[in-house]
Image (tube, rainbow, N blue to C red; front, side, top):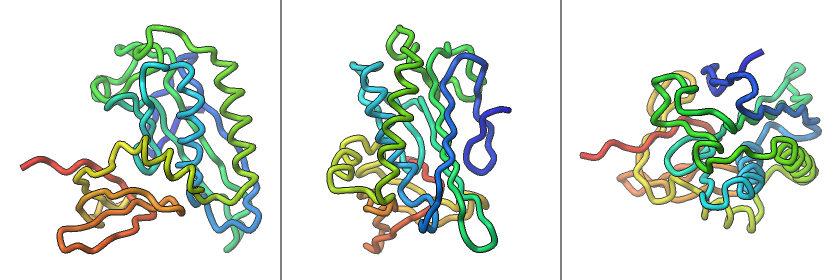
Length: 213
């Protein structure tokens, strides 16, 4: 087995260097993951705070965790369908723990980091895994929408807030919209106001910071 990201992109996962968790959740009457990637992101950020007391873990919509401007983790949630009905949701989480800069592929070394790089210390993997699994399983008992408290916490960790972004289709790469990221709503949609003043609720997409002109 090996790590995998959105749209089938590879996830660098050298043996023993990270923490990778997959949970199979019963779909019940849910139509899909909803805000689950962001909910897991909030859980992971809170669990990582103990390992990185000097670094505020940021969340980049829809599924990345950042320390500073570098990616330290990612989330992937996929529905498993039987005909037209979802029967389960596979929630995957990968965290970089012990990687050195040289462990990352050359193309990602300026964009990736680990707990060891950021803190100089080796985290307690078992304690971190326990925190993650316990907290995720407790949270998914409730509806997969963001509460008011979670929206406030997400706003404080949202690395895209008030930035100029370009949003494209996750599979084809075709343009969806561009504008200013204003936040995230309770369903997990990214809110982007374009140059004409139209507010877009983006449920799925790939987001990049717009290039400065």
